[in-house]
Structure formats: C-alpha cells, structure tokens
Amino acid sequence: MDIYLEIGMLIAIGLVAGAINTVAGGGSLLTLPILIFLGLPPNIANGTNRIAILFQNIFTTAGFKSKGVLTFPFSIYVGISALFGAILGAQIAVDIKGETFNKILAIIMLVVVFYMVFKPKTTVKSLTEKVKGKHLYLSIILFFFIGIYGGFIQAGVGFIMLLVLSSVNNLTLVKSNAVKVTVVLIYTIASVAVFAYNHKIDWQLGIFLAIGNAIGGWVTSRWSVRKGDTIIKNILIVMVIVMAIKLWFF
Picture 1 (cartoon, rainbow, N blue to C red):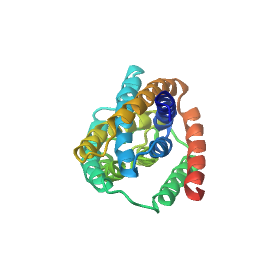
Picture 2 (picture 1 turned 90 degrees about the vertical axis):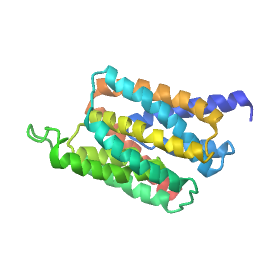
Picture 3 (picture 1 turned 120 degrees about the vertical axis):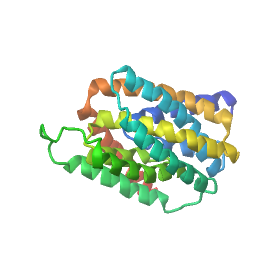
C-alpha cells in the first residue's frame, strides 16, 4: 500500500475513533482491525493502539478542562487504582489470544444501554454526585478491575466506566466522560510502558494514528460539553447497539 494512503487512512480512522471514544467508547473496535489489516500481529496492534489512546486522552482531558468540566480529585483516585490494574492487564495482553472476548463485550455493552434507557428519572435529590465516602471506596475497587480489562484489551472499556460512574457515583454523562478520559490517560501510561518494554509497539503507525485520535478527542470533548447530556445519551445508545450487534454476529 502507498505510504501516503496508509498515513491518510490511519489519521482518518483515528479521528473517528477519537470522537467515538470521547462520547461513548469502542473506538478501538475500529483502530485495532485497521492496524491488523496493515500487517501488525494482534498483540502488537494492541500495543500500538495504546499510543493513539494516550495522545487522544491528553487532548481530550484538556478539552474538557478548557470548558470548565473539572473532575479532580475523584478522577485521580480512581485513575491510580485503574493504573495498578492496567499493569496486570497489559502484562497478560502481551500474549493475547481470547476468542470469546467479542461476545462478552457485546453483552457488557447491551447492559450499559439497557441501564441508560431504563434508568429511573432523576430528581433534585438524585442529581447529587456521590464521589466521597463509601461510594468513592467502591469506585476505587471497581476501577482496579476495570484497569485490568483496559490494560488487557482497551476496546469497550469506556462503556463499563460510564456504567459505573452513572450508577455508583451518579455523575452526568458529560461529567462521566470527563472522568473516563482522565482515568484512561492515567492507566494508559502504564499500559504503554509494559507494551514498550516487551517490544510490542510499532511507533511509526502509532504516531500517525495518534494524530487522528488526538484531533477527534479534542474537538468532540468541547462539542459534547456544549450539547449536554441528552444528545450524548442518544449517541451512546445508538453506538452501543450497533457495536454490540457487530461484535455478536461478525
């Protein structure tokens, strides 16, 4: 394949994936197949994808912050917990196999959309964020296990985070997405280190993919804050259904 076509394809797919990852999740379900199509073994494609995820979340976190959406210190607490989990998950992923992964992920995604559709209507009382005390401790424990999953495969981890942040911590979708990208940024640093140490990253392809992811993440994070929860919820529902069907049947 012509090198310029390859670069253009990576940046374009990265841009779309960065946008999807910011408002919902599952962008890696686009980027991983492309990297494999370009000749990378699955485990190296998995590691290379983390470069794009890292740069995407640097810019996305900055995008949310520029719009006044702040998540500290809660996102730091759960992010550090996820980081320790991601070290373990990434180490497992170095020798990745897993064939039932797609169906398991499809089920998880459908659970998320079921919750989003049938979640009880909010009241003034229920709008209170629950990011302290027992809710904080529960989230720290859950995010350790989310980190293991994220370090292992990354694809679809955003859906799991949104479910936890919405149900356990009562955060809005915009705030949940802001926490999500900060957490992913923190634990991806560990994932990249593990994959790089084991020589499972193609840096050239990773950088070009990262350019697209970063642009998509920056633009979409700022756009999502302006649009609010309603449109983000609708996009999330559509994305989850489409990707769950794709994972289950294809």
